[in-house]
Length: 317
Image (cartoon, rainbow, N blue to C red; front, side):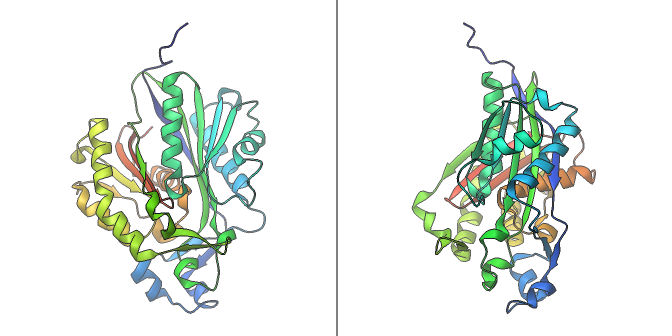
């Protein structure tokens, strides 16, 4: 019996993304709730966001983003043997979304499961994909973050309805002799689980100031540890792509990172907070704009409800 890993490491081959067509501006929201553009931009940095229509679901958005990543990777559906979907916004617990996404894409009989680590979900899933490939449990993995947060919003609550949005992002992960995904650094702070939860079991609610303090004071150590484990110096980074929670949080963490040369993802401005979709969405959009050349090093970080957090270094395909 051969218990050695199938390959020396794993790397991302390609990204894919999907955003609903419906653009909702701050002025649009001001027509339905007591807010305005200046109030929203000064607090969370968002100008507009995409909100899904009835034709969009967690599964359909995941399938579209996953299909784009699969096509960009040059692989056929038959090459994928594991599908992982990170999401916290399914409207039903059973069946999971991953098996349904695989079926839509023509991927036959893959391993398929969902991960709910909220806004850290994609980074958790990417770590699982990398470990599965390195252990020989999978050859090629489709990893997707997909969220329809609009299903869980109180549209009269300006503290949340101005922040959250919908979309999906994906990546294909495969074996490689030269590792391109660093070790994931993950953890949780369950004693603070009450800071982000479903109010009345149906409306997303968060204690914004408590989450802000946690993210801006405690997560830089996680970023530093991810760099250390990957053997990468902050000065080597081309970009820093954290969860797009709030522009003030993104910029506060970035300032302490010690990487002034790194491009900072600011997808939050036009995409809103899309939870587990935000990191892969930002990666796909930045790559599509040519901001991330092949071989460049990027530090990713997810954090959110749970409270959960994770970070890892990626080499861009």
